[in-house]
Image (cartoon, rainbow over all chains, first blue to last red; front, side, top):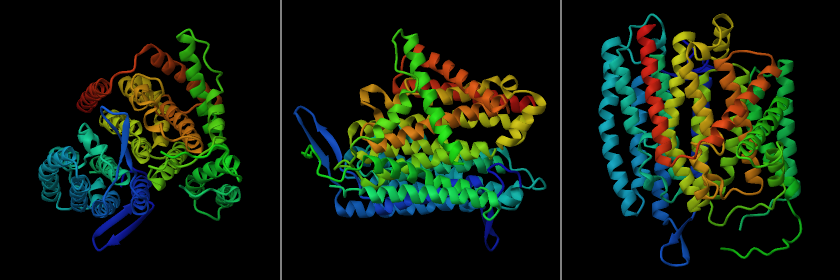
Length: 218
Length: 71
Length: 280
């Protein structure tokens, strides 16, 4: 196996699905873990907003049911993200990535503000459309090479993965991940509930990083 | 209000993390721990050391001279 | 290990101080002394500190620890010649940290700084990843292999100058007072770090020192190659002064202009890398 993310430190085998921890994937995994712990233990901030036309400001409070739902979604997102970081199987990777997309929609869609829900709906459509190239990439890898294991695909003896499959994989991840390419929708990112919103941007950037490694590995 | 940090607690955090990091470095040099174990230890210990040290030397034990008026 | 960490922090902060001094002299101001940033770090550490009443306390404090931790890790990655991809990862996670700094306090200024940080990630990250084009020549992304390649074939800065330019823009984006420093621009008070005062801000200064040291070291190792330690420090100084000229002479771009400029350069870089793929 070539050393894109450093020499793997150890392998964890679930039957024929091998999870591996290289310095790169381990770093990303630990970061996802740390921020998931933050989501579990921290309370959301009370966002201060200026009242226009008056010399006043007010703090936005998050109601308990909304907090519970968003915290659940953020924890699920963190777990999916950890899975996507260390998995050694292309199909598992695409599954985890699509789960990250679903959880991201859940985190922002629970906010009771019209603009945020509108942005979440639009992003939901993007994420939904993103699953098509994502899973078709995994299908194409399986069809052309006969295996989905990244360790086997990385060996020089493995048949080459077509360029279009890699491109579709990147396209799918760009559709699922909210943060870098959908960040112009600032409404979502300045919605109250810092630990949960952080999980949106963290998971999207992490899956984007991991797909860089996966594409270079195949 | 957030709980006050005691000077002794902050110092304890700084000292323990510094000692843990130095111990990890020495043990790695001696070959007891695997390579890069000291790096991993410092990644955790260094932030704790910095914040512990800074909180230690700024922490005040007495009453604040300017009362906090709140938001 | 602790020696490298403390030296990296202090030297990085010294470089940031020199950066401020050079900008000031170009703009015909006296400017602060060069060790001002180190004094800043110490000054903030002696200030009264608490957590704002509106903040999400654990995230507010935890993100400072993460900020120092990731750049400590980055320093070790560079020193041990591990994968360049991990440096990409840490650079990207720094975006999350900036976002976390801004969001956790509940201040609108910090919030907008955080949002800008995520927006600029869309252009800075492709810029950074396009540097992976050097793997076409080195056949590896391990920093130790890249350094070894340059021992034989000469500096990569001469082989792939445009990739060097992309990395230069990445470093420039992270320098304060630069054309791309939209996350801490003055209409947002101090951007994402507005609400982090006292000890928290001192911790952020430690992170900034380490970050400057690591990014400049990475640039020199990846594009110029291995060199004696004193020469490396001199190279970092020269690089800082050139960055200061860029920062002093360019106005700060508006957020969307900043992203547009970086995206155009990233697009050109990707075209350049694909040309390299076809040629090689």
